[in-house]
Image (cartoon, rainbow, N blue to C red; front, top):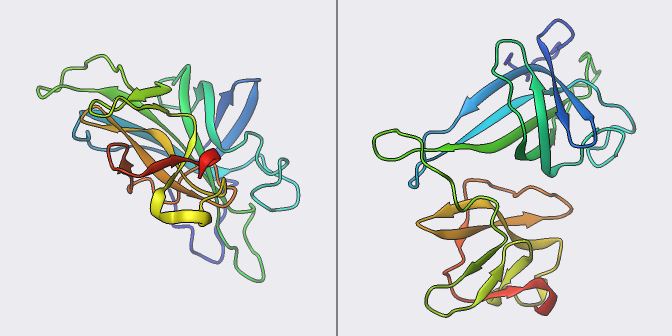
Length: 214
């Protein structure tokens, strides 16, 4: 991707590609790139497609439904049309928008919405051979010591967070596991993606309370 923090950042003459989501909703990304993380401790490889949203409109606020043709958070990616890249099909992905402040006076030819689509691409054993994935997508997990059943679709709070825990300040599962234990990420405000994907806490930590009972 081109360096964006320049007064004349433009995307009109960059490579454009299309991602089609459930409901035939399309994202057109310009100056896109594809990246892969190194395998994590469990051998999972996460991949991402990142680029500038080219088919946006509306008020200019990231939450404006006319700005984002597909809502952020969890989404179902049907297929991609990115030149030179093997078609990615039928994936449960996480979609995130980040609004980049434009210069004043504005000389960009786009509103500045950096878009990231990420997913767990594959899982590898110690020798690099692909192995089946049995945890990503699960909606329940039972604590092996206490027998407590956790609903991985719910929002949680730490017991020591007290009355400050609400649906707008909570911990949620984001399809990350470690050694058979699901992790929770911290979500703030109306965002449907965590504030820091690299930071999480395991559900084996004591003191988790469902938001509805906090």
